[in-house]
Image (cartoon, rainbow, N blue to C red; front, side):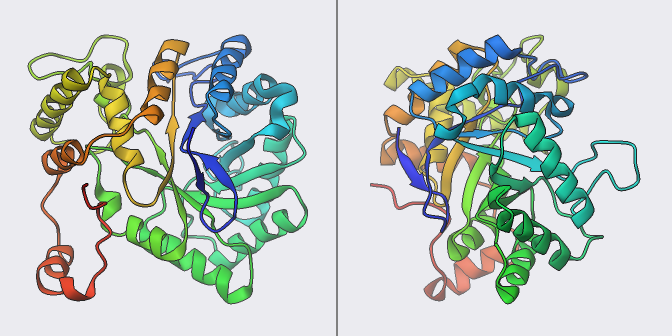
Length: 345
């Protein structure tokens, strides 16, 4: 398994990581997964054997049970790996059981530590921005957790570019711990990240951790032109994540199917492989409901798409650039870095 640097931390993390949203009884979200400890142990063992060293969870996954299941599944291997979790979303009925205030961040961290059965969290991430809490209070609370040894590194998830830059600037101005990573939604049907957040992350040394590389199962290859997604799948149950142009999606699947047939690999492997080739991407988080899904996804790290295949996928998934990006590319390209894609070999 390839190891990549996590921003400027000096840590090396596996190019693929294991997400645990499928761990625990996802009440109301059963199509995502509801794995118990024994099933989770099998997935964790396969991930470890394949070279994965980063495991991602969150307090809201299965109302905290995902963290408990992950802690028990790792067992004595806990200190051999990096565990990332998240806080921010509501975890109680109280008026302050949500957000990124000092009060809530510290309480959420201590609760996650108890559920994980660990004395520290390797990467503690804010699950979303909080515009009603002063950003200095937020970054100082995170810095205090690092100083106390309860957290090793901090990150964020689902931030827009201005939220991220504001937090980085606040931390830098006060000499506080800055976000090492951004966990974000990024895949062939959702490339908005490339406009602001990829260039920002590259410029500021922030690692990108990709969630939902298969677009909630939409890019699994099970949904084709002229047919509905299979019953019981996440796509059939909840619909696609975000806004998806279905005609454009079907064109993407046509290209994916052609490449899969030529290479003799699965469509999910191609989708993950494409992401691994994108600038700024440090690790792609895999979510699996069973061993066969995870085993297939893991194969994406064992080969590389050709420059021609990457170009085909880039072209078919491209969207027209909004302002000011089309102007920057057309009128100011001499003074702009080319960050949207690797040059194709």
